[in-house]
Each structure stands twice: as structure tokens, then as C-alpha cells.
Length: 225
Figure 1 (cartoon, rainbow, N blue to C red):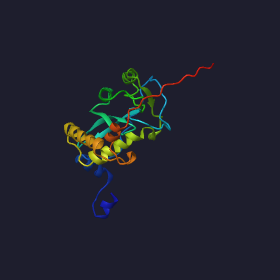
Figure 2: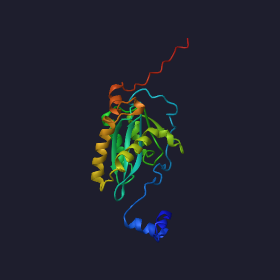
Figure 3: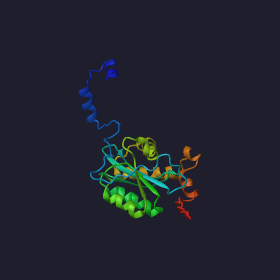
Figure 4: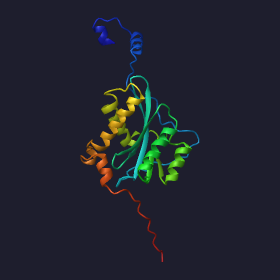
């Protein structure tokens, strides 16, 4: 407002808010937290601290973010392989119920064997009995981010940054159909064409396909005699 006043415009905060609202503009800032846990949930530890990743399907993680459109928002969930940064599946929804998260999980499990560890934040979708039972039935060890530790799921947070700054913010979609097509094209580019510095210049798809999948080592019991 100070800049406008220096240019000679008679302006105040109330008028700015009214004009911005009339234009349908919305500032880009984080929405309210999406990782609020449900009531009476089973507590699981964070299993990835200082863990050295060795292969695809060792660790998958998931998260939800909001995607702004020209008018309104939709919610995006993805399942990411940590070792390769490969996006296994993703889904859009206009609500935050657990259904679209389960759909993304089912799509990932249809593509690859279940991971050794599956990590998420403590959002009510991922701490729900439906999601927990799906992971246990698949044979996963469940890991959850520690509260207040934003870096626990750093790889997928970095993915959201790339999706928004390289795709969404450049050309805001007018509706869900257009957004779906934009994301489908972007994730194809991200997986198969985008060299990743952390992968020594290779794409997520190259690392995912070329590295042998993770196989837990059997525990050897020695005979005390």
C-alpha cells in the first residue's frame, strides 16, 4: 500500500482487500495443517532416522498437499519411492477423506511389491484404521513422522515444491480436468525426463529400473552350543 500511496493513489487496507476479493485473487501461502492425527490412533515410531537407503521398494512415503487453481483448490496425494524418488502413483480429490489416499496406495501396490517400510505423517487419513489395515495386510512396517519434524518426509516435501513451482504456479488450471492433465504430463516428465542431482544426473525412472529391488536380509541365529 505504501508504494501505491507514493504514486498518488488514495488507498487503504480495507479497499485493497475488497478489490483483491472482487478480482478473485488469492495469495500463495501454506494452508492449514493437513497432518492432524485422528482420535485413538495406534502410535508408530519414525523408522528412517539415519537409515541408509540401498534399493527401490525399501521405503515408500506418502503425503497430501493442496493445489490451487484459478478458482478453488484440490488435494493431491502421491506415493513416492525414497531410493529412486520415483512417483509410483498419485490421486486428486476435492475432499480430505481417506478414499483417495487408499486409491493411491492400491495403485502403487498394483505396480510394485509392497515396500519394507511405509512412511507417512500423522494426518487422520494415514492414521485411520482403513489405511493402517491396508499397510499391515500388504506386509509393510509402518513408520510415521515425528511431530514438528518437517524434514522427516523431506523427499516428498521436495516433490511438492517441484510440482508447484515447475507446473502449477506457472499455469493455474481452470478446473479439475485441466489440472489432472497438467499433473499427468508433469509426473511423466518428472519420472522419465528430469535429471536429479541427488541421483548423479539420472532420472528417477532410470534408478528405479536399474537398481535391484530391496530384499530384507534374513536374521541368522547362532547355536549357543
